[in-house]
Image 1 (cartoon, rainbow over the protein chains, first blue to last red):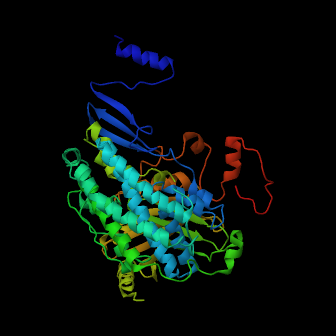
Image 2: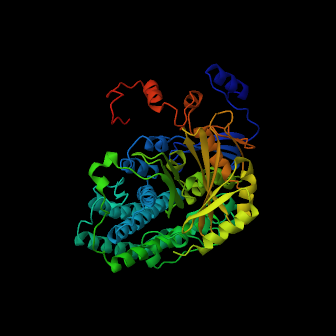
Image 3: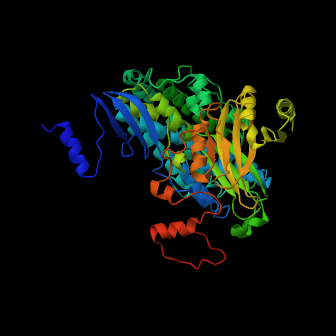
Length: 391
Length: 175
């Protein structure tokens, strides 16, 4: 048995520093290799099995998108900014396009609005399925996770037919969308997929959301109250799980949402279970919205605005000014602030991802006192998405 | 378009804050301009007027004016209104200082760390500014920032030992 002193000495000789151990307290680097953290790391000060202090350590995904956007023409930025949110890339496209639309003073044709709304809702559904996969895997309910991944695949195929790409669609552009709907066959396929998934929700309930394991693992951990959530800038499903009835689609309606009917689910508990159940209810609402959109039918007309600047996109100019646009993504309030000085490139683009609030201060405070085994579950219950912290 | 609600809120706030300038931008968007020494007073006032949540602090580098514009993006769940609170501070690194608002909106701490890292704005009263944030130590020491006068292309070429594929004075040169 090697003594502690010897270990410390040996580490020093090899250029490392072992922190002094007092009883069971130790420092644990959680991530970035850990599955739950997704290229993001937490430094945990542990006392036995309990977290004493957590320090968020982001920056593994920093690619300087906001700076790069200042060097590129307006339309080229779409292919860049969507990489900020990996599971839901349509959201950064949509907010950037909406902000540019506002600067240009464009009214988007109805057909383009319909397509954008549908794409955003499809993105939400597939992001929730992706989240379900993550959550189920963390809880050890692998069957439900694999189902979710398989059903998400159906949406990926639909996206591929619509946009030509599976993950990064580069589809929503300022002024409308890049291509028209491929045809009635695609709409029928979307309808079938929505109906299919609706049937399968019951299976998810049986296996995951009404499962004894889920309740046992999630109930009462990572609790936040309403005041805390508002002050810490928590948005989206996490805020609704803490008892605030709010939704950007209702409060600051955009695209076709004023014409659509849907409910905003709210729970009061504010724990990980409430956050999981809220996402389950929202998935149902999103499928309902997609059904309504399909029932409404694709409006006729052009799918993007007519503008002389489209002939030479590198020289396309946007009038000076600034605009802020935000949408309700599956993770929360996703916003873009775009400043133009009248040139052919943006002067400043700032993307506000929900995780910059959830992933730093909120997680640091929620983790205090949690068991080590609950750390990944709390992280996933917040639906933390590190790329939008790092940008 | 009915802008009564927005007008009323702007008027109520301006009455209590005569140092500010305010206007209604459009439905659900209002804008205020304030002097930098009144940031704390003004944000306290906004919080009392049901602007519950701070969404972001954006720093915009206006190189020609020699100023950095801080835009506090505020969102009110009660009124469903987004408020831009704009203030301008000098651009020089020593003088780019603003008071921290993290005791009013705790989440501001994170945004201030972000603005400090990329725009070298010092927020007085925030002791977490020097903690490691997104950039690596090497980049931080080299003075990497998102300011307009930082030669990003030159730095990237030097760091990653890139060869020039295009001539730099070419007109449509993008990285």
